[in-house]
Length: 100
Image 1: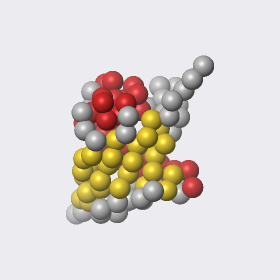
Image 2: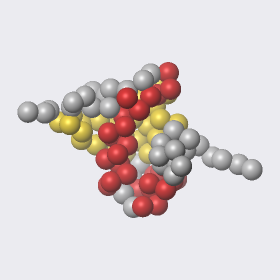
Image 3: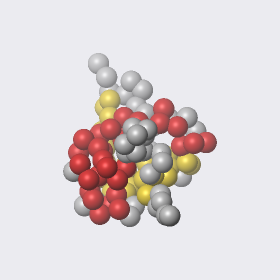
Image 4: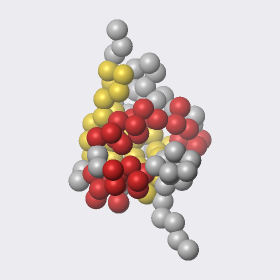
């Protein structure tokens, strides 16, 4: 039987606007629980506009559009979307603005 763990997610900027939430718990099954699964749960929970703002349509990846932190560390210095999360960890999504 898989355990379910709850992590805290904090949404900044456009992600907060599109979701209508600044903080929320997200539950994922532990097998292991990874950042990518938390992102998938968020995308499923909110409007298509949230997905469009977060997930790069060509790469199918949130990293071009968001700085993703786990307990204050950017996931690129950890294991990326495969970074394991534990009960009570905090994931922060900060939008990356693209200019031109």
